[in-house]
View 1 (tube, one colour):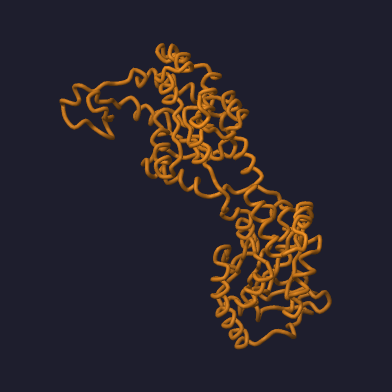
View 2 (cartoon, one colour):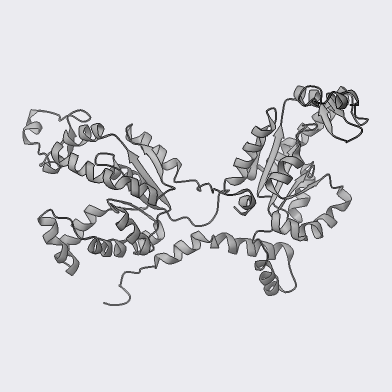
Length: 463
């Protein structure tokens, strides 16, 4: 075959490796840091950068706190996240902070939380000019009346320096309670209100500055709940500009709507819809060597050997359209052995869905449908009745759709489902016993976003 017309196939390993190791983000971050730091020797700079304990050494969580929010921020973030907590850095020392503090090993390795800076949009822009761009920004807010109450109710133990509150955190020891004092720095309510007013004025500008990575959390709730929401936010990967090629597997019993959902997904997102059964029929009809090989199996309604199916399938998945646009596959694999073979061929899905319905619903959907041989239109006794007696008279029913055959297919499906679900532990289970467009919305909501990562506390900031 002429090399100029030969179908171009891209090894699947390339896309999988790039996605697994986030190569696009790696290159993007390297270029960004070179442009921000402007080193004299860029090559040596990049080498040193890649040798760091952590690749992305400038993880930053900016923590905006409404004045007197009375949340033990250092406890929440320093001990649980194991990162460096930096607070109330005077503006005069910003250059030293940027040039020295961020370059220290603890900040590079563990990341850090910065509180009380920036307080204004001007300070935020100053940080941006210095190359400090946060991955996550959290703003804790509460009603002014709550914040004033928290501030006025503070009490301090002069012996230990511990801070208590007359309403929220009163000491259990009577001895400690008797020696509590009002903090000398406590301001009257009118001054607190003025400070809060200034905060709200600047808060709007800060929200606009960090709108792409900002999360506002209600701080008028228990500390544990506040922390849980912050943790959930920083664990969820931000939207990535990395090229994303969908590789989707759809599982489900007969009648669950796999073909329809695959069609809807392919139409909306321009990816390749591959039904394994239809692919085998197409190959059988093209009179190729592989087509002649599988034709006897199809004509006798026998199962095509997995090794042959895999050869046909991998050839199709490695074509340019599947590699560049992505694919949605249904009808294969049907058991764990086939799933393992598909994975060993480096065709690894990044989204797996199980469409779930009961056997009774499957029987109702499948056994009551027939096709008009004249128009090719499918009808259903309940969901899409035939338009008249003439069409009803010529309606044809597939023998494979009889209840006896369907029960056999359902039993075979359920025999392998548990093992397949264990093989794909991150698969999403969708209730398919609802309107098809509702099912599609459920699928779509899990297609467009990045999957959250399950991380230990120590790994939290590496996402």
